[in-house]
Image (tube, rainbow, N blue to C red; front, side, top):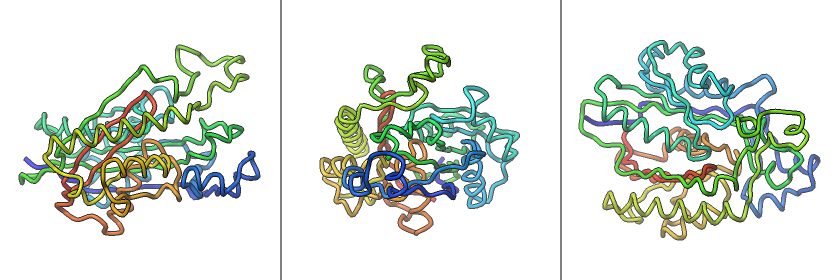
Length: 329
């Protein structure tokens, strides 16, 4: 049995919010944002667009590329921290919208590591169960609804978007997943969180007045833990696969901050030319970011079968990890 990527797709909302637009909203500047994050602009969903709308658009493109009908999808995994509802799952909503009547549905809440976690679950389902052949993995976020647009330290970072990959079982023995590690450390959960809205702090006048329904982040602590977590996981999967850094065609890190990406690549010994980045145009789209990169790379023909692709991410939870792919499409 082999596994391949059968199709990819992405969607970014039409509205673009530039750094110059943000200058009119909070006390910041284009120069300050660019030099500290590498971000120039981000996409913002329309008021009447929900997370599942973004996910559905990406999924339909992936299905078209794969030449599959929605009825042929066996499982839908949606990674998101900004889904339509607490329940039903956003995966179930996407199932209804695309007509994937035969699919099991599951949401994955691993923040910016979400797509990585989704790929790990997809790998296990395909390898462990004969009945699963086509799995739709989606990372989708409408982060603009949980960003505090009065907090200049966080509102400049995030954008909306979605990406989808169809992971498919094949008759040959070509591998896709070479090695992986997905980890978490809940001891640091409070440094990157959405405080209210769950059973710990239910919605109330007090929680709204205190702006507890918006993301909060301790930037300096996140930076240090992000670099250490991603570098450590990357080294483990490279060692497990017996692959050296100079064999990596592309490092695709979660698109959080240019300085984080540069630090990770430097410590791994991977040249910056081999690090794919598009955060200047999308900002941090959390679970969608790695998939947005993959879709762009496929459409620009930057990857070919046999290339070693190293994915790595870090997000709230804290979650982190890495995955080594031998590209097969």
